[in-house]
Each structure stands twice: as C-alpha cells, then as structure tokens.
Length: 178
Image 1 (tube, rainbow, N blue to C red):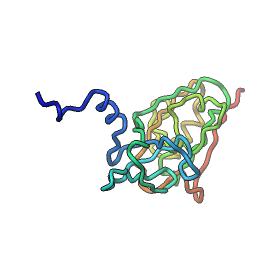
Image 2 (cartoon, rainbow, N blue to C red):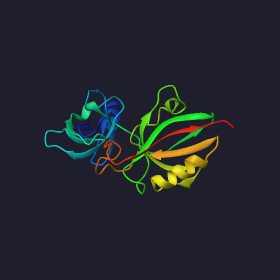
Image 3 (cartoon, rainbow, N blue to C red):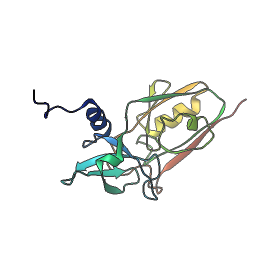
C-alpha cells in the first residue's frame, strides 16, 4: 500500500524529541551571553517560518529553529539533601507572598549534584509541606534538619521573576552542626 502518509519510526522519534508547542518548556542546544548554558525558556508562539518564539528566564525573547530546541521535562523534581552544611542553593522571590525560586546553584555543593535542578525552578514543598509563598518556604527551610526533601517545578513564566534584582528577598541556606 501507499506509505506516504506514514512517518518512519526514526523520524517519529526525532519529531517527538524536538516538538515544542506553545507553553512547552525548552532548552536551547547552544549558549551565548543572552542565554547561558542550561537556561530554560517557555515557547510563546509558533512563527510562520517554523521558528519558535521563546521567552527565557532572563525576560529576553528570541526566535529559534525548532531543531535547536530540546523539550524540557517539567515534572515535579524531588531532591533529598542528607549532608550537614550548605545546600548550595540561592533562592529569591519577587515578594514574600510569591513562590521561592532557585536563582543560583553553587558548584561543588549538594545541590550541584542533582542534575535535574535548574535556575528558575520554583520550590513547591519542603518535606511534603506546601510552600505557596516565599515566607512559608523560608520558615520550613529554617526549621528543616537533615535529611530534607525539597520538591521543585517550573511555573509558567509570565513576567520575569528571579532575574530582576531590585526588590527581591534573598537567602542562601546553611545548616550548622551543633
């Protein structure tokens, strides 16, 4: 029969791996000063020329070839910190009533050992307790011992959040041994 309507399995795999629809989270396979390596963006629109308009965590927007984007799995990420000392996370929020977001991961720390963590992810819970606001997150983190399990996920981008330094609350976490 006529197979012109069928996509070869290898083509289907490539298409699925590269698909980036509106609202999807993506990573660019390249990097530059505007979009550092590992930065996650969200597809805003599909352009008539086949490119994707992507809003990056920095607030910048660029059009990219679909072949240069890779889908970013935005499932909830649970990480458990077991060692005393710093977690290696810097967390900020636009206000005490907004979600706390990762704005930095210090190299060589416990946080850096979790490849699934990325700048811009919002803290969802501490040991299963929801963190709807920065204030809640800070209270739970300050009271947490070890081990402590933190859950993160990207929120829809909307306006840039963790990249505008003015007016932010900031914390770097260190748990000292008694």
